[in-house]
Length: 202
Image 1 (cartoon, one colour):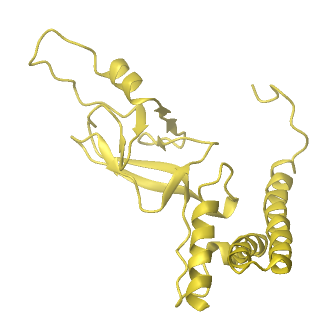
Image 2 (cartoon, helix red, strand yellow):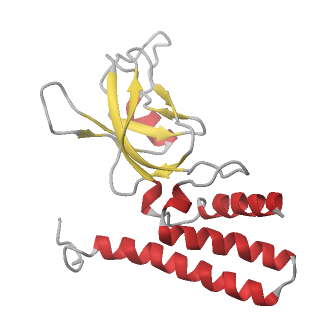
Image 3 (cartoon, rainbow, N blue to C red):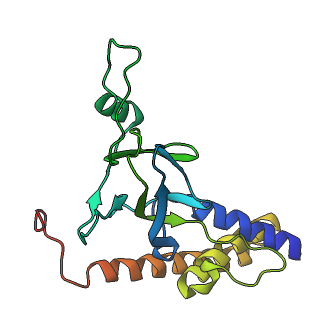
């Protein structure tokens, strides 16, 4: 059943990485993007799932350690706000520093043309390496709690396909325990500095 087990692990990983809440070990921080002078798009990196909720794309002006955060917008809003309509068909938009961005299917579009080369930074969730019959570990299996979650999810699929009710019960408990442990650690880390208070950081 090796091939079936690997297939179920792959399916389970794919489903879990489409979840509304993603585990923290999938978050990669301070990754770089290069926006080249005279262009306005950058390719979305392989494995991208979605941006971090806690920060946005940013760059550091020369001789400054304070980042400039770009604003994420809907495409139509970004275009309307930055490429103003003109009755002159030959009008062009002067290159400027990036201020907004739009996540498209395969690119990040900064709408306005860059006036110079920019190194941009961002944090995003990246899919773990796909398990195969020749691999023994990836980010899911390297994390103790997530390993229980993934194996429980994959095992439940196998048990259900075999119509093994006892095994299904065991794997369901393993899955639920792994999921609870994964997010329990995340919640504990977030609340380590004390309870949340509405408006405390405004």
